Length: 145
Image (cartoon, rainbow, N blue to C red; front, side, top):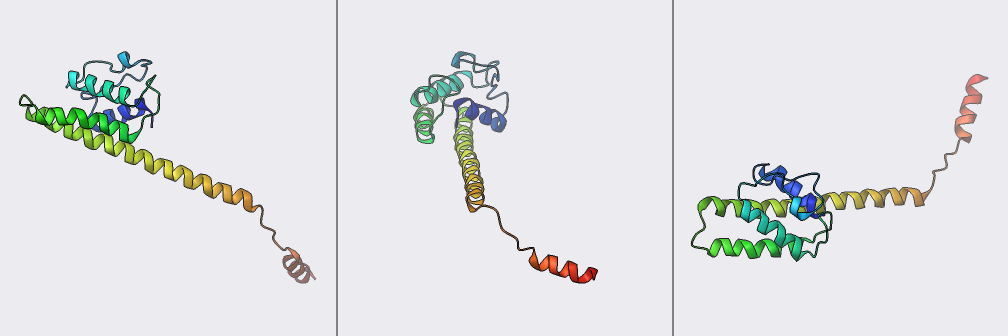
């Protein structure tokens, strides 16, 4: 999955007010159209995921394990902080579920694409079926006589 695709999935799942993705962004600095509800948290999170995955652009591929590791580090900080309010706690939990759901859906689509490609490959390698028309022609000539 690509970094920008993950953020778009989060926007769809959590809402524009939480993750206002700029679809015309080319750089990490331009990722959000406006300020997310939890602005500092989303900036930290997006930068951590970007860095942990070694991204060089927002269309770079990201890895599930690296992404969850980046998210886990920040989640742990939020849970351990004495300043964390209920809203931020719920937000980070929803974010964790949304990220996992994005990767699960992406894996499901990839498996479907691979399965379809495999089926098409088998059909191509199998070749065309030969249909014996002799019986059909014989019946047709008998019925016209």
